[in-house]
Length: 426
Ligand code: HEC
Ligand code: HEC
Image (cartoon, rainbow, N blue to C red; front, side):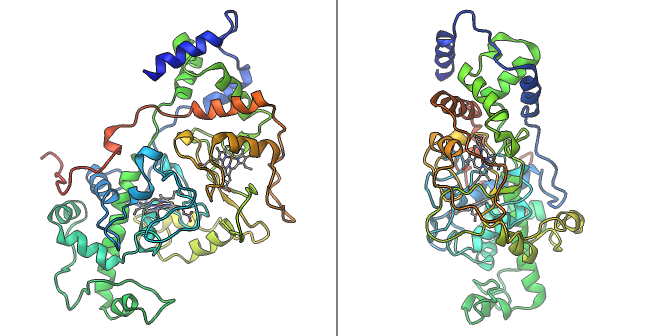
């Protein structure tokens, strides 16, 4: 219903002799750089990245609260499909309060680095962190693999994709809970973990990593296919009048600003509207300084699951080049990852601490840079106050809204029927 009404409204406000396309030839060229969004790049470090059976297992896991300390938190608690795979909160809350805002998972498979500070270099290793983070799922890898083995549906689905589970019912070898916690050597989870035989520990960790790879296979399906802006760009290629009216004139003017004097394109470029890198946007923060990428790089290089580790299925090849690039930039604290802007209207609030409630507020910030945290000696050079008038701001918001896909496939919503995890072809 909403679409025809919007179209009528757009037609009604366009002056009768106003051309349908308001972009210059150069802007039309640029528009093609933003659309269409092709399938995500392959992930050679995850051998099940595009395996549908792995994605089904990952999907069940994603929506299942049993893999948490209290039995109430799943990935979807914070990454809710109905809220753009975020949670609507400023700061996330799982088993305890978090420090940052929940990122949307739309088009997450196109990213190069993960988390606001890029402390992970693959989607599968990212998935392992919330499970053992006391603020999120607050569980341990031993509990997770026991829960999978104890459930017939999960155990079968796991073994179909990855082969036999370790003999987890041998209680002498596999304690009920445990994980490495070298920072707290007396913690019972650490004691239980270090008491195990090396090969049993490795088997548990491998199983845990495999679950991360299945979750990543599911997350790779969270792709926006066709927003009104994409339909408009198709129209630019074919001249189809109806497609050219898929976005209102205000959104077209907003696009001109986005690639022109608004300078948004400097960071939000390409079909996923991000350069996949980090910038110090100086967004106003609460107390304390979040070092962002500066600390993220150190954590990444130290991470036992990074792409140089034996868990990468390409023998560490990608990791050897990818991990030679990032250097901690202590002179530039407060760098955060440029988010994608596809479906951005569906996941307020915005920024790494959810500092801004609406897209209007975001645009207002870029327009004035009011409240920007004081620049360091080497601050981000790309940002400057834009001084937009009211119409310019409204146009930019209209453009951002035209990046919203209107239908979400059912397969990406709500939990799948559990514990029924059918095999392929059954
Ligand atoms: C308590 C809420 C919470 C839960 C539960 C949670 N997340 Fe998150 N997620 C977050 C927050 C907050 C961030 C950003 C954290 C940061 O940057 O430090 C995040 C970031 C991510 C990212 C990075 C996205 C990007 O573009 O870099 C991915 C992927 C992700 N979560 C997947 C998952 C998966 C898979 C699970 C379940 C295993 C999960 N999350 C459970 C809150 C949560
Ligand atoms: C210097 C690079 C850069 C430029 C230029 C830039 N952005 Fe951003 N954008 C970012 C980064 C980095 C963030 C995240 C900042 C943070 O959380 O602290 C962000 C966040 C956002 C968000 C919030 C998204 C979310 O999910 O939280 C929106 C919306 C946005 N930018 C739109 C724009 C628009 C519109 C323009 C042009 C007026 C623009 N950006 C210019 C880098 C940039």
